Image (cartoon, rainbow, N blue to C red; front, side, top):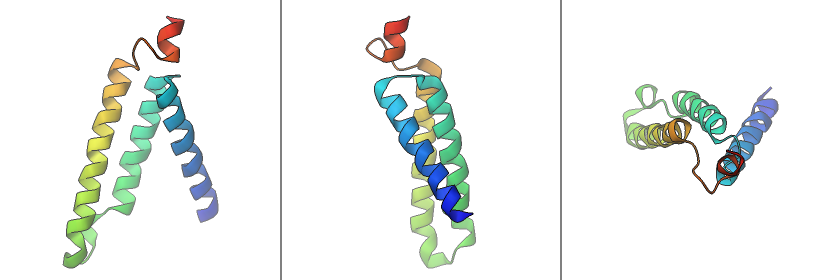
Length: 90
């Protein structure tokens, strides 16, 4: 099962990143990546459940990911812009 999860995560990150880079279905890609990042943050950077000497690094990485989610929500709210694939269709 871990191999399947890694494969799924890899597909989500690469496909979502390329979609945002090209501006193709940017809003959906940003929402999916934001949700994925938020869920992964709670599973992999649980600073509240690690020893005190490791908590600082995990807390830093957790809040970095929350900031990334905020940026992705900005893309979800405003889209990619006029030079994107989505912008050329409109």
